Image (cartoon, rainbow, N blue to C red):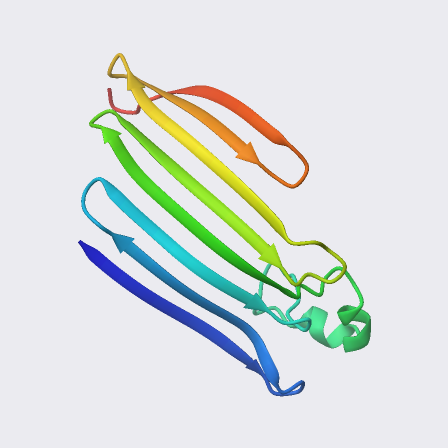
Length: 148
């Protein structure tokens, strides 16, 4: 058994507010069950960037222009994940994302369930269900297990 609590936050001195905050709890209950819960906050001044430490975008555009663009990533998100071993050869992973406080967008709830099992000791079968705001999808696939 193991329990981990992690947090991370940043203060925006120019706007005098919390720019981002993450709080996560990860719990391995035993060898068969593990779960995590995470809450994330992003202010309207937290820009969507591939490299967060690259500040070229921040200094080449006025803040109001960035604030009123799709690069402004103001939102709150709740993430939950669970991993369960069903049998020695089968396991399940469940993920859920709930998001709110995005400018002009409704609350959303997305879920993904993956079932894995080993077939004939060298093939892994994956069956997935995913519910998003736009669609519900089922999929399946086979992977060869390396080293078998």
